[in-house]
Length: 173
Image (tube, rainbow, N blue to C red):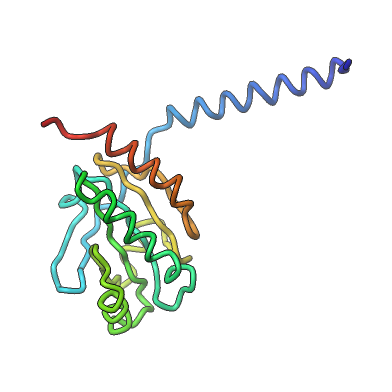
């Protein structure tokens, strides 16, 4: 098979651009997660500083969001799988979600992780003005956002990434 020179140059330029983009992305500094305080259903307050040193999944959701309800069992299973290794989950209900609905959902589903209500919308705002649910952030032990998911994550890929983060930054001991 014979290729014309312009086509070869164009393909070479595309390959160089793709490799450069991947290299830049790997060198890019991760964005720090915002400093927020979550108010949990039981009234307890948990801050970003309290979670430092753990790999954290922050999931913005609503009881009226079909995808959120569908993915919640997988978020719970992910939490149970990794929690003993320094993994934490915070499910943040959107400001428009009635607190009674959120509390009943968490109780009837026996959610095994922290559930917060963002009454004022301040937490969603600090995470980049989250408006779509579900939107999920994965944060490393240093408090940096590693991944943002809009919609349901690929949970198999999420588990691989969580496992890598837990192994890479495991505390000595």
